[in-house]
Amino acid sequence: GMYYELKEDYPRALDCYIEGWDHAKVSELLIRNVENFPGMSHYREMEKYYRNLPEKEILASPALMQGMSMLCALAMDYEGSEKWYQELKSFAERCDRQDAAGKQARRR
Image (cartoon, rainbow, N blue to C red):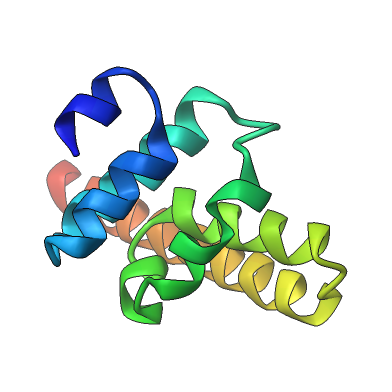
């Protein structure tokens, strides 16, 4: 998988990581793909990898939630896209509240 990853052949790298049951590496590579290519992260080519991730893992990553939202929109699954967009929005709101609470606690 690492060989293909270094060559930026993400689909082949992902196939290797899936065969090796390395789901953390699959998530890491999908996140890197979204961050490196933000408007065109080859969502269609990566669809099967996104769809195989556990929902819990997607919910832990803003980049993966964004990717799922975009992927669903491209597949004309507007309900799914909206679901992931709302999850991303909720994640941002939780982070803002946690950040604000942390800043207030440090001031005291």
